[in-house]
Image (cartoon, rainbow, N blue to C red):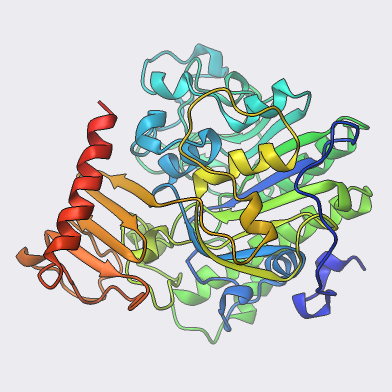
Length: 458
């Protein structure tokens, strides 16, 4: 039985010999970026959760570097994905909020889709384009949710192959998008609609990724493995529903889906091992943002632990996410990093680790390579920015300022005096006390940092 089927405690943890990046003479490593959907800030055993089993994620952490202050680019799906793939703040990448719905049932080819929404996004240089230009075979597998018209589709954005859904969510068996009517089937191979009704979508993802890896031979590959779980609808396997029968509702439903997700991550990594590619592959794992408290998610189920907020919120529970990177023999194993890091950082980090040519265009992300190798290294970020709707947040050092905060976890009411909400995250990660009145000088400093940044976007 491969190591990815075991518990993290069964994996040998230690410091491996490593290099900053590959040399020109070496074969470049493969890369798999696993992005989960609506997974809570602490919802993995390696992040402290005790009531849900996540052995595959835990094993990945035991074989790599786990971050404790890693931030999504946004607290909602599309802009978070745009930030990860482009290395730019979502508002700069042209995706400040969620992208639109998938095409209607009348459309059989994505090339038939008209429209101009997302043209700024279509002009971005994505992670896939960077790897493709370096000679990698590239694949998008899973959720897209970054528009489906000309220029914005996966095949337009650097992916050689694509399999998955264009919209924000699907039923995992019928593959139907159901957010607003009329419901429509949303499963595509490259630009063509395909139907595989009755097969669990995460199983289809593992199948597609395994086939893609097996076909590449000596060609290095990049896979964007964008899972749609534990995003609603909660459709965990029966065995996991039975296993969590004693958990309170809706935690039981969410937990079953999360463990079903973890099992597919284990299957993906087992395939990698069986193909003899484990030591030649960098694996990145991240949740796109915090857990959902929407009606469609039964009002919750996920956990942000001590953090306030959830999906759609700029409190920590909406943007602080689990994040891990593993490269056996090249990066530390069983390591933890407390430095502040961000979803936009994966692009420059992977460029450096893989020995690719430096990026020729402007991005907001910073390479984390030095942080991965040194737990005393400083974070590459002095200031970080977020926007969602009419709300914004800025973090500098331990201080974080929010404008028009939204607590989707409903841990405490917000009043008129909380239009500007100041937190000191080193002193109190719960963000339950607004420090704005006590530190007007810090509010002024962070307000100025935001205003200067916002002016630079115009």
